[in-house]
Image (cartoon, rainbow, N blue to C red; front, side, top):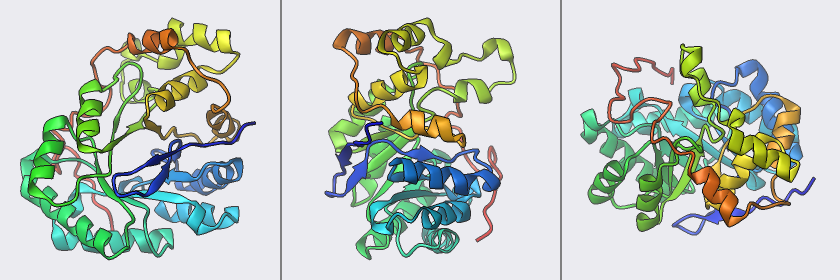
Length: 298
């Protein structure tokens, strides 16, 4: 297995591995071993969040792996119930305690919450303080539309290093990617192989599995690869940062084995053409504490 994971240079010069392991919906019981397996495989980016309720197990997996902390790029996120300047600082401290770490490599605001923009801005200002203190090496956002990103940039001092959004062949987010490029913000892909289109619907007939798409399956057969490997290669060649989730050791390893082949321009275009413009997850314009009344015990 070729284990050369390229890095992306963030707008403050910090290097971030391009491909990482996501742990959304990974149970606490499975998370530590998934992280351990990923790091032993060669992954160096682990993405979690306070609202995933598995930060502690992420920390356990890192320590169990034996990989030096300085070699692991750890991302976590501020949940919306902790928005506001002082609450954000307290929540960050709580994430550090749960992870068992002294600093975070990338700290993200989980949603834009346009219905309470002042609280979101205050939260990002708290993240700026953490950045200035060196407790976070980089800061950014999740699920921001081009307008959300522009508004935040106007009202704060530090341009987000990363905008993590739903992004897969059925929802390619071209406008978000173009906005990120204008601001110097890396676009990171959650649900990069389109799992959200399966787990987020209760109607099996409406579920659209990217990995079963004929275009993806034909390319997988052509290259002698899995469908997931084809999709992840598409992300990487687009300059994106995919963070596929898995707790299965074989899939974790397969998802990392994508650095020794490439897709042609016509193959990339064929995948681009699968875009439906329809998201599978929540609309960021609508997300607030009423939609998600979840709270994190800090």
